[in-house]
Image 1 (cartoon, helix red, strand yellow):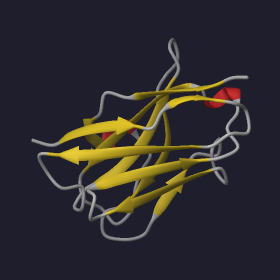
Image 2 (image 1 turned 45 degrees about the horizontal axis):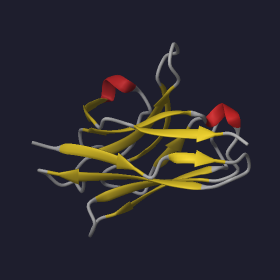
Image 3 (image 1 turned 90 degrees about the horizontal axis):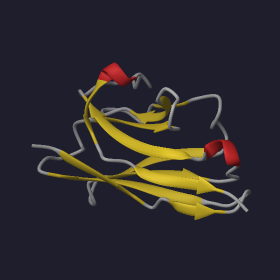
Amino acid sequence: QLQLVESGGGLVQPGGTLRLSCTASGDTLTTRTIGWFRQVPGKEREGISCIATFSTNTAYADSVKGRFTISRDYAKNTVYLQMINLNAEDTAIYYCAAGSPTNYCPIVETSYSDWGQGTQVTVSS
């Protein structure tokens, strides 16, 4: 059974950079569409990025476009989320999720069946 583990979160100053990792065990991520989501306590979970299975298609929410980059490392069975120019509004718990194989990637929760436990990102001076 696929298990996802997020890592790389932490405390960073405004304008700083973090790279989150989503590493899989029990199955390969090669044949899965992967999404990144985030949630602030008391608010709905927000889809922020995804990467398709069979193509290089990616998608980003407007709130992170131009600052976040999603990528895969097939050899390491890991998907990354590179985040630059972070601000306080990026503070949240970040989750990765795996969905069915597709040629496109929707950033919609219902498209993903397997979820990690999340990693906290805090942007503060």
